[in-house]
Length: 206
Ligand code: MG
Image (cartoon, rainbow, N blue to C red; front, top):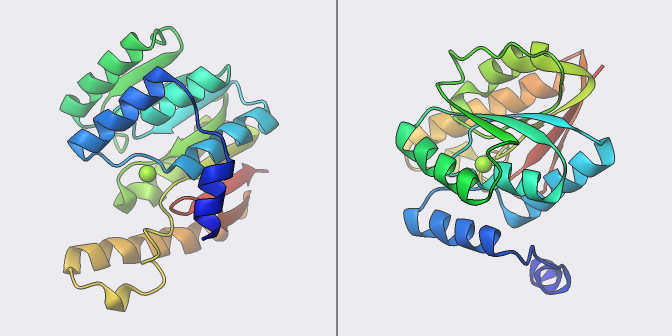
């Protein structure tokens, strides 16, 4: 009920690029960040005055393109699936954002990024690798920089893995729970996990 009320009262991005990306994701069944999640992320970028963003997991470029459209950030984004990355590149070009979004086709587990001055890192990729991504890319983040992670509640399944029938899915959900505990216990970050979208965390580097 509350969700319906909010969906009615909040204004969506009224933009043709956004609409076409949403229908592309829907047609191809490629998961993208929730509507609430992307609004939250964009508001955070504005509050934090982030200028330089590193994104792990581009998918079709939806979150990168929206961040670039509605804030003034420049983005480096990494995608390991070549087919999807090529689609993202097309979308970025079509949105006229090739000068602000640099897409790297690579597995983020192996990719190395030379810059150490990112204001914000957004992790939205293979859930089983979140600990590795967090560990690995911390050095690329400025102090007072933010790490934002998506899908930490995994559709509300993270707190009751015993109810999940598929073994693979249960293992995955357990890994997310393990990551969440790891995240909260990182002493060089102030972290909190929110019940926003599919579960989003904010970690502030000390
Ligand atoms: Mg996601």
